[in-house]
Length: 326
Image (cartoon, rainbow, N blue to C red; front, side, top):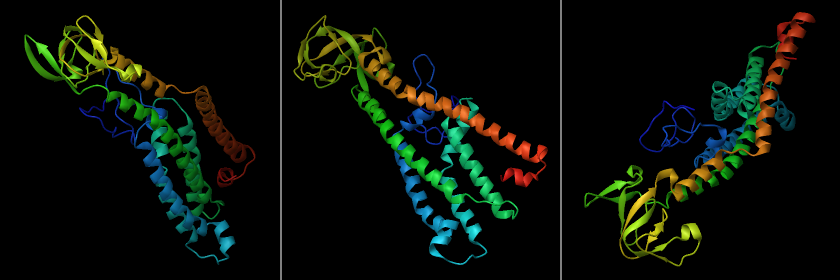
């Protein structure tokens, strides 16, 4: 969503309200942020749960101050009740502002979806209630209803984020299958390099107990390799000169020199990571249908509101305040 944001280490996008930074691909491109990607963030579920608990706590005094609470507890009307409602509802609105952050991304990318529709409903209800607090002719306050909607949405997004983060954790576990560094053999000398610097045709030395950094073929030596991460079979497999080894395979004994054939995303582990990442970003048909429906509902809601105000104010002849509060 924000390609201008760059960092030399993993972290959060400062403009995306908690989205993870996406690793730049070998072709120089980056994957696009969207709502489903945000949900795969390990911190997303905790973020929504924290907001949910805070809003739950704030809903209690808001209910007491609301008209249903007043009727239930039977206390007398007092002058600042509506202003106290506004104050509590504003704090709740603040914790629901995360929906507006993602709605902004949908609008700027012209991919109107559920966040746009949700923000439209929450924002309209809050602004209408705030105006009604200060304008005696504008009857109607929906502080409790809008705050309850935020409460429900936060819990729903917590459940979605918790299920989505499981796939994100799987991607992290796959990444752990590869070593961080490799012993690059160049002109008869060994040099430790990070595996992102490796290229096809490089020769690396794999020592006992180490993992193979990429797919390749053994050109010197022999050893037993544990390939359980691919085959599920823990019994070591004997490999010698001319045999192929898979990225992530553990060299159990001996020392081998491996000429790399597939590195990075072209290796076996790279392809697995690519499949998991693709699965994270692929929306089920029901979600695609919901996104399409919410896109149309957004325009229908806006169009209906404008049409209603226009008819009552300019055709029927009612006051603008009456048309807005109908």
